[in-house]
Amino acid sequence: MKTKNRPRPFFRMEGGHSLCGTVKVQGSKNAALPVLAATLLMEDTCRILNCPNISDIECMKILLQEVGCLVKSCGHTCEVNATTVSETWFPKREMKKMRSSIILLGAMLARKKEAQVYYPGGCLLGERPIDLHLAALEKLGAKIVQEKDMLCASCKELKGCEIKFPFPSVGATQNVLLAAVTAVGETTIVHAAKEPEICVLCEFLKKAGADIEGYGTDVISIRGVKTLHGTSFQIPSDRIVAGTYLFGALGTGGHIVLENAPIEHMEKTLETIRQMGGTITCDEAKKTIELLSDRRPCNLERLETASYPGFPTDLQSSLLTTACVSEGKLVLKDTIFGQRFRIVEELERMGARISLQDGGCTIEGVKELAGRNVIARELRGGAALVEAGLIAEGITTVFDIGFVERGYEDIVRDYRSLGAKIEKGC
Image (tube, rainbow, N blue to C red; front, side):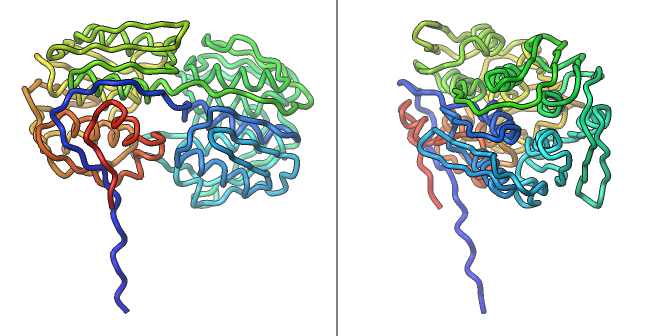
């Protein structure tokens, strides 16, 4: 029997038009995922507001349900009741879909004193070892055994200690926080990550009864408590989605306003856009960011991604795409994920001039890109290819859009609200 080929969803757009209009920024993927993982710690109900409707969030909900949580969703509100957690094993299929699934290890160890997880999946961005996660959890008292691609962890009890990371790691910091909030004694994380998503997790845990100090700095102190309780919590807006749309508008030229914008978390991004020639106006009271781009952007001479508050690696691809049509040259280096340049081949097919070096690239701006059929190979690069299609002359079709839908609730809806000629098809 012959099997029919599955439809291949795509985004198709007509480029060469300026973006103009207003769009509301969705809730943050990178903040919501660890908060949802943290609900495992409460034998109670948590109500999470402003939760984005994206595939990564759906994946996390399934993982929680598989171990016995009751999960209900309505619009952008998600309720998790973890009273009935009975299993400690997380299914392979969902674990392999996203990198952040590894933080369930620390949460489940804290809750049930054992956990079985698979090595996480997600986007292929070069080496992304989890050694820091495992070493930190072992220092807290866990015994971790590797069985093929599965990690089996257990402990009699978790005990607080000093954990000194060689460099800041967002995921490892989150895993320690989740494991340490109900551990015996005090835990100190030295060289902790300072990203806004770390602060959001700490604020959620504190609202649930945790005792945490120092978050937002490179030293976090956690005094273990016996139990946590359910709470209601609002997820902040997504700084990466906001940055994606700003770079799209900068590259196409235009005049856009972002509503519900996380201004306080975007200082380096906004500074970079200003340096490239965009006019930015922020209204903190109204939580809006206005961008006017009425001339061709100018490339910076050099930019490196860095841990917060530096320029975020998750916006590297969007910056790279805008740089392709900006005046002058940019030397761009990614110090977080040095192999995060899988988008380059597709951009070159559209007419970009990019030369790759170890851990970075040099972009020489051209006056225009040409529409092509291109393939998304990871989340942020996929969103940047949509941006490239909006910038380019002619028609661009982006395939393998499942990557984009991991982090963007409805990129077609949002860009249409800014006047883009874009559609989703299959």
